[in-house]
Image (cartoon, rainbow over all chains, first blue to last red; front, top):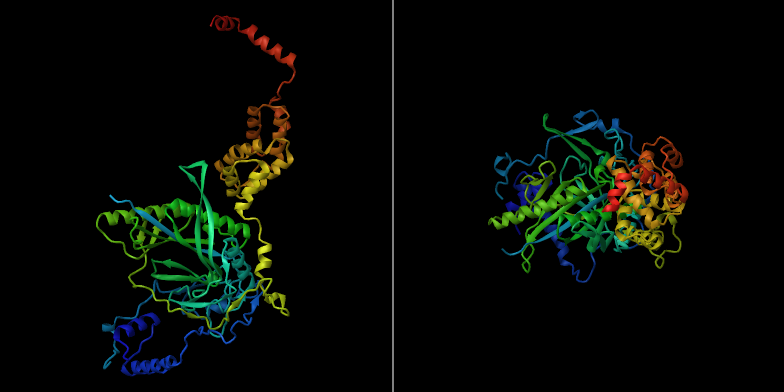
Length: 109
Length: 463
C-alpha cells in the first residue's frame, strides 16, 4: 500500500519533519508495513491496553507544595535570543516551505 | 421569513486554585517576574516527567460532584499536539479519551423582561470536565516582529467544563457562566476571576430553522467578561442570520470578539483544519479514584482519593444557600439572588439581622436599596464599605425603637457613609433628628403652626 503524496505533505506539515527523498519515504512505508502486522491479531471484544499497570493504582499523587521554580537565569541560558527575561520567538508559526519551493523533493515516489 | 433558532454551547477553562502546578512543583501565581515560576518540566527540558498534583484532582472531583456529574473512577491522560511558542513541549497534556467527570447539569436563573420578580429556572447539560495543562503567555511585539514568551502560566492546572448547546442567546450563556463562577468560588476549586484569566469562555454559535438540522457553527474567543460574553454571542447570532438571509454561507471558523467595535472578526490564519494527533500520555498511568465501597484496605492515605469523602464535605452550593436565606429570613427569591451575587453581601445581611431587632424582611430593603446602591455608586466592594454591619444594625435599632423616622434614618446613613467614625446616636443628636414622642409637646407645636398661619387656615376651612 502506497502512502500518497497528499498524506506525506500533510504529515510533514503537522510534524515539521522533512522526509527528504524517496529513500525516506520508502523507510516510512516499511515502518507502516511492520506496524500493520498488529492487524493479524484478532482483538474483537478486547479493550485496548494503554498501560501494563491496568487498573492497579500506580499513578503517584504529589502533595500541593511549591518545590520548584525560581531558576530564570538557568532557563534563559537555553534561549538563543532573550529580551528582559522573556524568551524571544518569531511573530507566528513558520510553516514548512511549500512542496514546490523545497530543494529536496519526493522524487521517484 | 422563517424563524431562526440560535444554538449556543460553551467551553469554559477554569484555572484550578492550587499552590503548585498540575504536573510540577512550581508556584501558581498571577503576577510574577517573567519565567520565575517555571520548572524544568514546564520548560519542557529533556529528561523531565509529569507528576500529578493531588489537589488538582480533588478540585476536579469537587466540581464534578457539584455539577451532578458521574465521576469516572478510571480516567486517562492524552497528548494533544500542536506547535506554538508558548507550548514548549509541542503538546498539551489533557484528557481526551476518558475525562474525570461526565454527564452533569447546571441550573441557572433568568429574569423575564429584566424584571427580577419574574425569574425562570433553566438547565444546561454538562458534557464533561477534564483536567489539562494551561499554556504559557505570548506577548506580541509587532514593531519588532517578534513574540515574547513567559512560561509562568505554562503547566497551571485547568478544568475544562464543556456545556452542551442547550442555550439560545447571550443572556442565557451569561447567566449560566455566572452561576458556574459562583459555584467554583463557593467550592474554592477556582477563584474564577475572568479579569485575571482564571475563567476563560469560548462560545460555539450556530443558527438553523426549526425542524431542520443544526447549522454550521463558529467558535468565538477572546471574551474577557460576562457582559462581553452576552454581547459577543448576540452579535454572532445576528451576523449569521444576516449572512444566511442574504444568501451567504457560514464558515466553520474561529472568530475573535473585538470589544471596542462590539463585533466578531475571523481569527485563525488559513492553516486549514487542525489535526491534533491525540495519543495516550505514555508517562502517566490511568488515574484511579475510589469511593467508600472500593476503598483499598492497605494503602497510603495520601495516595487515595475517596469520592464519597469529598462529597460529604462539599459546602452548600449557591442554590442551596439561596433557598436557606429565603426560608430562614422570609425574603423574596430575587433578594437571595442579589445577596449572593455580591461578594460578602449575604454575610453582611445576616450579620446585621443578628445585631438588630428589626425584622429581616425590613432589613433587606436597607441592604439592597441603600447599602448596595451606595457601594455601586462608589465602586466599592462589601468588604470596603465604610459602614460596618455593626453601625447599620445600630442605626436600624434606633429606627425600630421609633426614636427616629425613616427619613431621618436615611439622613444618618448618608452621614455614616463619610466614615468619620461617628455613631448613629451621635449623628442623631448632632443633627437633632430625634422623633418627638410626647403627645402634649406635639399638640403644642401643631397649635403654634396653626396660630402662625391664620390666613391659610381660614382658606383651608373654606375649601
